[in-house]
Every structure is written in structure tokens, then in C-alpha cells.
Amino acid sequence: MENLPIEAMITILLFLIGAPALLIQNSESDVRYALSHNLLRYTFVTTGLPVLGGVLILVYALIVQPTGRTAIFVVLGMVLLSLIVAIIGLPVSRKREVVKRLRGKMVGEVRRAGRVDDEDMKALVLMGMESRPGDERWWAIHALGYITTAFLHRSDYNGCRLDKVMEALRKIIFGSERIGSPENFLSVVEVLRPVILKYYQMSKNDAWFSDADLSNAYRLLSDMGQRAVEFPVDGVISACIDALDGLGATNSSASQGLCEIGIAAVAQNRIGPAREALHILDAIVTMNDELCEDEEIIFDYLALLAAIWHHSLAGTREAKRYLDDLYRRDQPDEEDPPPVEGEPPAPKPERLLGRLVRQAVQHHTTVGRFRIASDIYAMWEEYQA
Image (cartoon, rainbow, N blue to C red):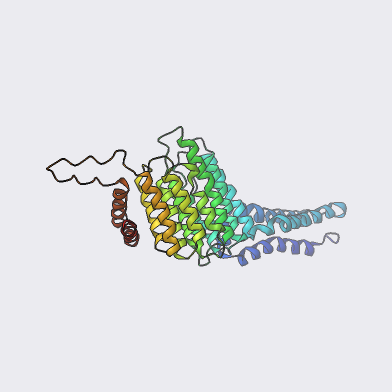
């Protein structure tokens, strides 16, 4: 026994037991939650197995009482275990490592069963919300990007599998007391772009392909764009607007998002992003010689035009140019018929543009957007005058 430093081995064993436990105990609450509820196997493998190995080596040493070269190998075994804990086990409490492990678990579940566990998603959202804006919060957003990609690559993806992912992104970016940084907003936009692209790829060949995930993505982009007017630069707003462009395809959910972002930008005197949104809507509305057939897109277009009209005198002049273009496109195909002698002249039929304005006012009133409805009505009255 004189050749075997039992005291040193006991010290190493105490390190194997105490160091990981101390780090986990002193880690952030969201990390402890994930380690104790969602990553028990990972926690045991990285912390429990080295401890178990150390106990077995110590028991062997006490029973066999090796000497000479054997004793040296026993001590080296304990030292090796301590190195394993220091290199692999101690990072167990780092949030980045925990998010990475949880991401791998969830991606594997998506690939295997086409779903995510609610408890795992709850833990990931908690770590995202509790993280500091910037790089730390990006870890959770990046993990949701991996999960989204795993869903999109499944052969049975049908366009309505990402509701939990969308809700998680919304909570991480908006649900904390500290709103995400501009970089976090841009990261979420990049997570949503493949969802939009996937819909337009699949819907070309499948008319029944669901647009549920697409609509959720557009709503989140709209909310982020409206909130981004608080940032000092236009880059985040422009990124949301660009993602809502819809790859040149007509979509009323995208037009509503563009309208909402544009109106929010006008309210904050951010005219540049508002004009970006207006140009996209105008391209959709005037894509052909006739006006766009989707009335909801026209309604959104008129709402944004009205916001710009009432912003300032320069805004009124710019909006008037757009209305003049719409009016020219709405010219009747035939001249009014000549009056019949002895009969009163027939009333002129209502122009399509006038009817669309009236319907837009009614639509926005019905859904509770009274200010928008009033602005459209006032714009049209002033334009006709």
C-alpha cells in the first residue's frame, strides 16, 4: 500500500464527483432545467460514468492493493478520468453546449418520427428567452433553423408541420423582457426563407399543398417588420419586406404583411421602407393591363396608399401618382352610349376602381381597422375633388 497514493486517488474521485455537480448547480436556471428534464442521459454519460469508473478503480485498488507498475497504471487511470471530466464533462453546464445537444435530440426525433417533443421545445424556448440578445440568443434561433430544415426535407412534409417552430421563434424574439437584437431578427428571417421557398416549389405541382406554415411565416415577418421600426437602421425592415415579396407570386397574407409594415413605417416617419413595400404591392396590382383580381391585395394596397397620402403634402403627391395610374388602367372599354331623345340620361356605371375603394372601406371596417377605413375614404374623396 505504501506505493499506492490512496489519498490522491480519493482526492481525484472527489473532484470527479464534485466539479460537475458544482458547475451544474451554479449554472443558469434554464440550463439546469434542460439538463434535469430533457438531457438526463447526456448528463449521466458526461458526469456519471467517469465517477462510476473512478469508484470501480478505487475499489479495485483497495481490494487488490497493487504495487509497482500496476499501481502506476491505476493512478494513471484516475488521472485519465479526471482529464475526461475536465475536457468533456465540465462544459456540460455551458448553455451553448446544452442547446447544441438539445438540438441534436430534436432533429433526430424529426427525422425519425416527423415530430418534436413538447417538453424539448419548451426547454429550447426557455433557453432562448432567458439568453442575452445577440450571439447567445442566436444559438436557440440557429437550433430552430436546423429543426425547420429537418421538417422541410421529409418526404411527407405537407405544408402544415411547423406551427410549434413558428410559435417558438415568436416567443424567443418577442417573449422576453429584452427584445432580440437586429442580428437576431435577421437570423429569424433566414430561418423563414426556406419555408416560403418550399411552399412555392411544392404548390406548383400540388394545388392542395397547405399554406398554413407559409401564412404563419408571413405573419411573423409582418410582426417583426413592424417592431423593427424601433431600430435605428432600415436593414431589418427591408429584410422582412424582401422576404414578404413572395417570389413574384400573388398572396394576400404577404400583401397584408407588406401593408402593415408600411403603415407602421409611415407612422414612424420611416418613408424608405414604406416605399419599398408600396413598390412591391404596386407591381402585384399592376402586373397585367387590368387590375389585380385578388381584391384583398387591392384593399391592402389602398390602405398603404392612404397612409402615405395623409402623411404629408409630398406623400399626397406621390400617392396621387399611383392613383392616377390606377385610374388610367380602369378606363372603360366603350364610350358612354348617346342619350335617347325624350328619356333622361342613363346614370354612368360605377368605375371598377371606385367600387374597389368602396369595398376596401367596407372590408377594413368589418375587420375593425376603422382608422384605415377612414383614411381610404378621405383619400378617395380628396382625390375625386
